[in-house]
Length: 201
Image 1 (cartoon, rainbow, N blue to C red):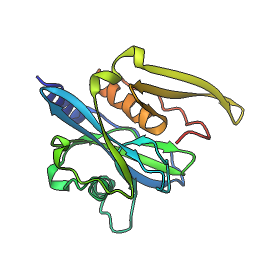
Image 2 (image 1 turned 135 degrees about the vertical axis):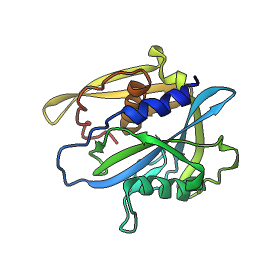
Image 3 (image 1 turned 90 degrees about the vertical axis):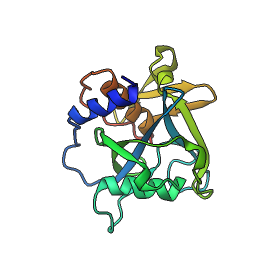
């Protein structure tokens, strides 16, 4: 069984957790997964330096919920289309991950995992996306590529997570979503999410 097929089954059984009641603005991202030569890859983006939030960072496509969105899943698919030109009909939504918050931009983010075609025909929006980044999922499973830094924020110690992937560093909210995805892939039950540091995206 391919990793993508296994992930489809695992997400069907996974019960994602929501944050406690909050006043954050709701947002959603798509966690796009595709296979190339039988190897599962994640599709991420490098944001431009002109976007409102998380300038220049490696991120999943997504954004804030709009009044016309029927659901957060629709938010994720709409934003992905706006950023990458990926038609919603081309995405097979496999399931969702845990809701996570980001302090800096004030969002509660719901990630949806989607199987997508290889990114050959994407049309990135140059106002939002500087570059498309594709990385084998196995890179994130390599213990030598993950590191954590403990910092004091607001009088408490918090952990910032980083994945070093060649010339890319995936950190902050995106890294926490990747860790949740890996927990699902590896059949682990994630621990209760720890609030991010005050300067973490």
